[in-house]
Image 1 (spheres, one colour):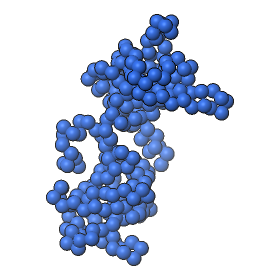
Image 2 (image 1 turned 90 degrees about the vertical axis):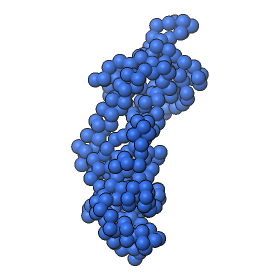
Image 3 (image 1 turned 180 degrees about the vertical axis):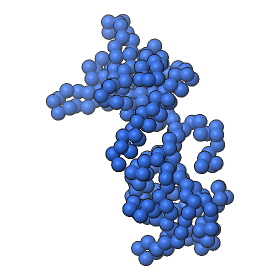
Image 4 (image 1 turned 120 degrees about the vertical axis):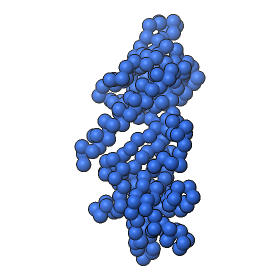
Length: 253
């Protein structure tokens, strides 16, 4: 499945397999609605056709694809024992494969029909892969306060987490919004994983005024001097959150 991505490159990607039929259908429909081009690999990189999703037949369990303008390539595609597909959706690389393809007529034009894949793989650059953290039991980042603010340390709930940093909610407007400001020796307790220590640099700030005229501040922070063991802990926590999220989605089916 990953033959066209080198192992060294794969290390920089968050790799997650989606097995929920409902989620697979939703992702494929989004790809089709946004007219995203799909690379169809007939024999690895040696034979590549660009196609698109014309329709997703959830009841019949099929995906309808556009065919090539080349009759010779269409014959090779129909004769293939396995086909791999790769596309992107909102900066996420999506890959899946099928072992069956047949000619089909869609709205009067030639097309292909393949089975709905049982699984697909989502790949996203690790530093950009953000996972929302639970609202019911917030993950807390404890940040030391400078002497001018009275010293000590305060805990702030996370809004999301990635391998590059976190977004925290500073609704009391304690930390300020100076872009580039660094807070050292911060601690984040990741449930069931452990506590990590890291510096945090403010990279962006967003103030939201609620209906009751209260202001909420969301600070995007980048990890500074994060150790390899702490990065590994963050990766394990993100995978844990995604497994829980997919289990909830599967439970709704």
